Image 1 (tube, each protein chain N blue to C red):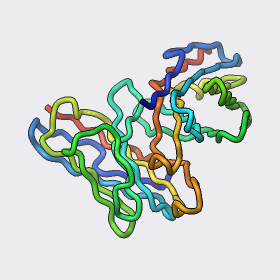
Image 2 (spheres, chains in turn brown, yellow):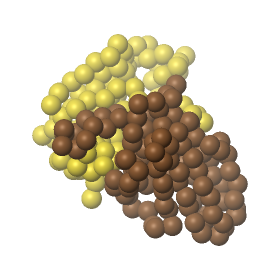
Image 3 (spheres, chains in turn yellow, orange):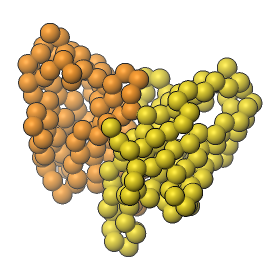
Image 4 (tube, rainbow over the protein chains, first blue to last red):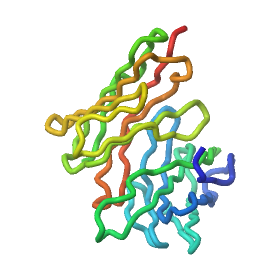
Length: 119
Length: 114
């Protein structure tokens, strides 16, 4: 098992509500990426946080937002929930060197995920 | 745009036989290719990866090959065992130039027949 943890495990919300999901990265990792995995599909990249700043974003609307804290843990916030937001939300942590040292730390290790159901 | 295609979507093999999963990627700047195994209700688990400066990598019963010219890469599992049953995802990344964003294939459901 990886050292990446997520909470809560499961969550049920209704359309229009807001939700916050949490992720604690593996010890020594400073980068957290978030993915959405719909049933029967591969994970899709939402965004990544490195040193408390957004470091890249996938094709998701602005109502998906995030934070990273000084201890490298991270939150994913989703506003105005829609039925299609029902999915498994995965965070992945990695150890990344500063960009000027080249593309290191490509390996990403996933947490157990949060299963979000929107009714 | 960036895309990873994976085939087949389902694969059933006899225990002890080999399984091969094939993927193609669209972005020639991709330089890192991980493979993940996901059991039902569990997290994706990194099982092997390969970087663009290597053509083949092996770890016990698992091997990956990469053809950068053709933009193809494959996973080979030999001497399959019941515990190999799971969904396997191939993926591609461009590293830091793209926030290490991993683009996943659609997955292959592998079943091992006893």
